[in-house]
Image (tube, rainbow, N blue to C red; front, side, top):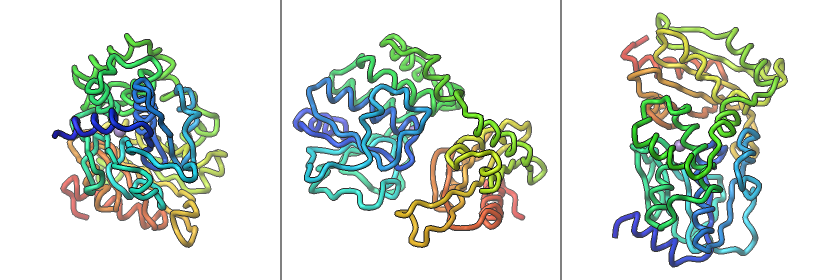
Length: 333
Ligand SMILES: [Mn+2]
């Protein structure tokens, strides 16, 4: 049986499902999860939506976001667990429940796999977003066109992962799928304004400070944005507000790779010492494959967008990231 047929059988035969996605969830991870929840409920199934981390404020317009819980109910067992947008077991929280509780694990994803995680794997690395893989599953389940409550989160996932239908993964099929979701009742401006705008003053100030400190290396081929804790403090910003600012480095003409490094206070369950970690984001403007750069630092991602979190101070992380990015561009320091 194909993976898709196995996933369909699990969804049809089961009654109670756990849906989850990677820690620090983004629009595709959450949108895919929320969309799949509606699809399964349409079939009369019970779903429990779980993520250790809170739904980011800019995604709190998605129908059903309040249903995402940070803890699992005691004693619950599931017929299967669907995990969206998650390429590796390491992207799930520590103490993720065992198989006796989760049942078979179905991976619904569009990243290149980092490990052999999952009992059933629905993985389409050509899909612009995991949401597209969810829609393929919806079609196989006979729930397509999807209900409006599923269309909005799935469309949001596609908008976010394609940068508003701009990135190279955007194809004619992407736009046809997006058109189908608009026909199902999505309001495109509500989605776009929530995903790309609606900034807080603190984040706007942080952008100003980060842009002022923007540097280039390797004759302008690499942009570097540094966001130390002092900068976050000066802007009155939290570390999550730095997410995505790396894209401003890529906008500079001539830049092939943009790197942003920022200090992130580790969660108590991430590190024994509770120390500071440096988070690194990479964006490629062209042919450079930044997922290869991120992998050398213990992270991962896509060709054009990737990241890693390292247990190093900001300066050391900057040197390491620059050296690896330079190597990707064929430059040895
Ligand atoms: Mn994604």
